[in-house]
Amino acid sequence: MFDSLKRQVGRDAGKVVSNFVFGDSHSTPHRNTNAQNRANVQEINQKRLEIQQKELKQKDLYLLDGAVINAVNQVIAIDIPNNEKEIIKILHDLEIQLKVNKWLGVHSGEIAKIRNKFPDAVLTKYEQCVYELKYIECNPERLNLAKKTLSKYKKIQFVYKYKLFLSIFVFLFLFIIIGLNAG
Image (cartoon, rainbow, N blue to C red; front, side, top):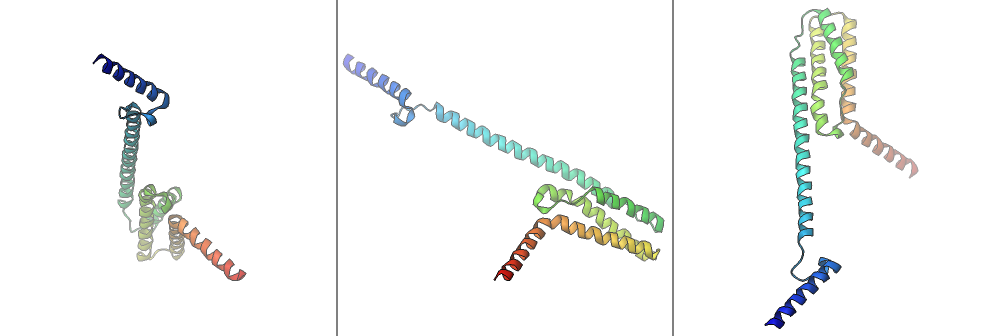
């Protein structure tokens, strides 16, 4: 009995030394799981951090959306008067908003979708003011200028929102033209 105990202690001591020298790759079923546990804990912590970052980003998007919706509601609340001079004043204010708050391209993701709501609302209100100028039969020069400005900002809106797609289209078009000329 004493001999079997000595052999068992010797065998276990040899395994400990072997595991210490060679690591877990040569070990027998009594592996050291601390290394695995540390790796698992790090992986879990990394996943938690990623989840927290996604939640913070989502909260930031909600805050941004709330602020933009508030600004859009202020634009919607602008009453369009029946007086030509007052409408022109509103058009000037809206044009300043359009110059300051440019559209973001669709490649900018969720932030672009949210932020583009405001210049879209301003442009729509601008368009409503131009229609009102038509109905009250204002000075034709002012009406034409307002129409040109509206057209300009509609083009800017289109280009800013879809510049990625436009650039791809232009690149493909040029590639086809060069290919036809070369062939």
